[in-house]
Length: 196
Image 1 (cartoon, rainbow, N blue to C red):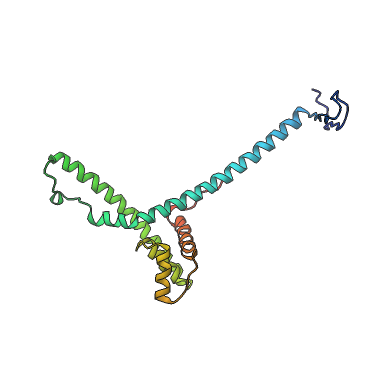
Image 2: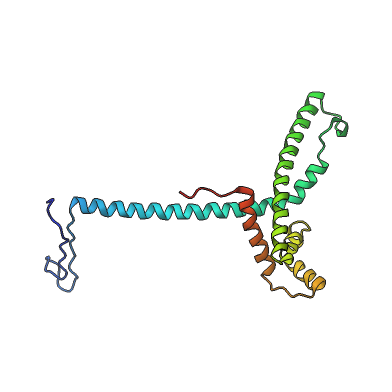
């Protein structure tokens, strides 16, 4: 291939020995440098798109992790308050002393981790309540509380809000409010990642 070829040569409709009625093939001649540049640009575009998709996926994962954490929150609090972590609480008689110690250490370790995580969640929840009150949108936080802390379904929340306040919520309003708070909490709980 000649290095000096600068332009692409395209001959549309030229007689290339094709049977009558068929379209003639088009030829493009590129220099090695032009081909290399074209491939590099395509690779850069693909990398940018991949990074954009990875960023979207990380954001979805943070939302999912926060939502899942909130769905387990009441169970985590129950674990903290009720986990058997002292030998006097154990009623298992078929365990040796060593087995009991191993079990108790394990429970204490999980209880401690759960306490740390719920302390972070509690601070994020308090901040969400403070923000909603400051913005005059207390009902949004109340809906969030009803969904996660009281375990109510969205339909039940709509009925309860109408009964308590006389305000009629749209079918998707509770879900939208919960989603908004979860998105905010995601940043409070997991922080921001450096977008490189």
